[in-house]
Every structure is written in structure tokens, then in C-alpha cells.
Image 1 (tube, rainbow, N blue to C red):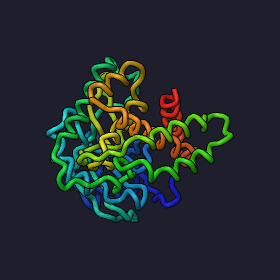
Image 2 (spheres, rainbow, N blue to C red):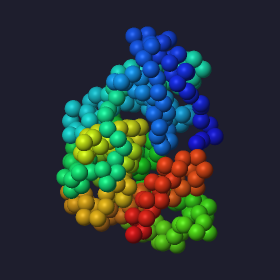
Image 3 (cartoon, one colour):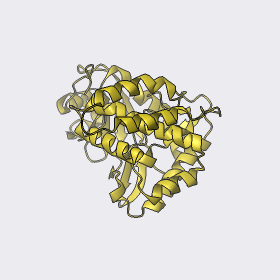
Image 4 (cartoon, helix red, strand yellow):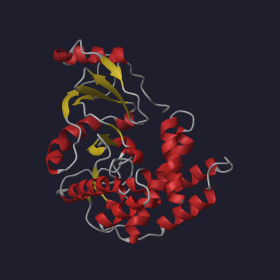
Length: 294
């Protein structure tokens, strides 16, 4: 998916485990099919998984998990990943990597929610609980994805993406530009930075037995504008649940517009970048775009 991506396979992961964590040597290693863009994931036996950064820009994420997730997880109503070991570079792999406990479930979709309204309240409760945690010493917006920071620095990328999508027969570029400019005109957040996950896309929200149970992939965890965690409004929720989500979070108009701008920019920038390499993520981008413009 990326020009600077490092190839990693089951045999290499097995060698790393045998060399650094021999108590797990011999457990079967199986790659996890995923449309995730930053890490390759592997099952390790039945109870563990291994997270391998794909590229230099995503290296160091496991150290962040080790530092923050054990502190945050006990204060939140949905499960977070549980890092067990921090692996070192080796066996031809250049970055640190991690072993985690496997969380059961499948990536979320609106159709999988047995009670969408209840799950909307659950998700809003997670976001409110995360925002309420003391963010002293938290990594600040701008250090990951740029989410949680003002929208204006993304303007060039968004317009370049719109130019790349012009004439493709699928994208309402005029409607997307109008929506984007409306979000750009929203008041910039001037409150204290609060904890946000910043990547609450469906693939990072697990459903088990028809209920939301866990939030994974905390690489973008940081303190910034709370609008950065409104992504599920357009990426996951539909119909009445979107308004329930907004009401449960008490979101004002400017924050809502900034959140919509984040969703729109992620979809627009993702479409040309992943068009030929990640069909799952492209489908998600198309779905987000349809919800925003709808």
C-alpha cells in the first residue's frame, strides 16, 4: 500500500517470537486479513496477536500503547488492546513491534448492531469517558495523523485529492468541495486539549454478539480537538442513531462541522491514495463520502 512499506510474513514473525519470546515459540502464526493501513496483524495461537508496523512513519506505536493503554483502559467502558510484550528489531525486521492479547469480535458495521441506539449511547459514553481523563503529558494533536488539530493544514491535500478524483464518474467533487469549505469556515477549537482516539473508523470498533465491545488501534491516541472523535457519525452510524450520537455528546454546530470535515477529508484523501491497493478502505471511503454528502 505504501512505497516505503516493509514486507513481513508469518515465517519472519515466527522467527522473531522464537528469538525474543521463546515461551510462545511453536504457536501457530496466521496473518489477519485486514484493510488496516499502518500495521500488519498476525494471530499467535488462539489468545495472542502480533502487531507489526508497515513503515517508518508508524514505527514507535507499540511504545505508545505500552505507556498509555494500561493507564486509560480501567477508566473506559469498552475494552482497549492489552500490550503484553514490546519486541525489538530483528530477523530482518527494522522496527519495534508488539505482542497483545487477542480481543474477540469482528470489525463493526451498522448492520451488525443488534440495538443501534443502545450501541450509539455506548460509543458516546466511551468518548465522553475518554475526554474526561486528565490529559496532562498526553501526546498533542499534530503528532499523529494531524487529527485533533485545525482542519486548515489539510486543505492542500483535500484539493489535490479532489483534482485527482475529478471526472472519475463516481465522485461529486463540487458537492464535496462545498461541504469541505463549510467545515473550514467553522470556528477553530480554542478549548483545552482532551483525549481523543482520533481513528474511530468501523475497523477499529469491534462487535461481539451484536454489541460494541472494544476499541482497537490506538496509534492516533492524543489530546486535541474533540471533533476528531466524531468520525463514527458518518463512518458507522445511520439514520436516527447519528442524531442520538450528536445529542449524547452535546456537540455544537461548529464542532459538528469540524468533525464532518475530518470524515470528509479522510475519505477524499484515501480514495486516490488507496484506489489500486486497498479495496476495503476504498469502499469505506466511498461510504463515508455518501453519508457526508447525503
